[in-house]
Length: 126
Image (cartoon, rainbow, N blue to C red; front, side, top):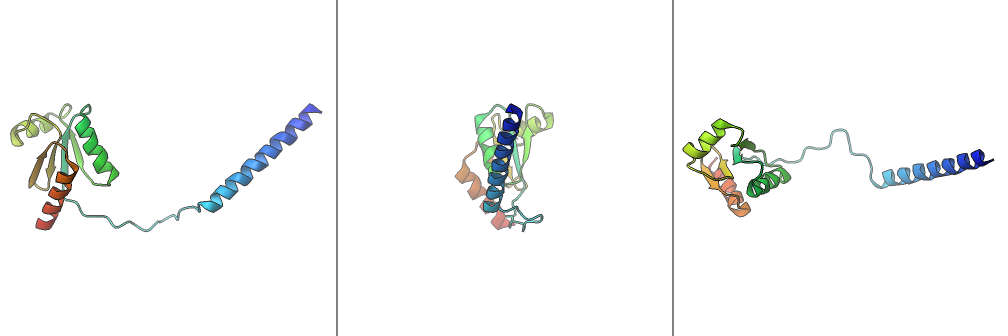
């Protein structure tokens, strides 16, 4: 008798869970297979010279990623060529360094407002 009671309880729970799942799906319909492409802003080339442990580098990476801004991350601790570029070409001993366009703007450190202004300035020139 206990087995039959357990089966009934489990069946009732499964039915309730199925009903709740179906109700939730009605509230949030399935996304289309080919959603319309979002209008993407054209960005100039952006290269971020960084290291993995730097909080300012992390903030820059998170900002760029969160805003769907394409960028190339060059970790100067693992990439000798990146370290050479950072120290010799861009004359910097610190990170982050953000290069926008074809070396049109070099930002040392990360400041969101300065970055956005620099990107707009480079976009206007193009």
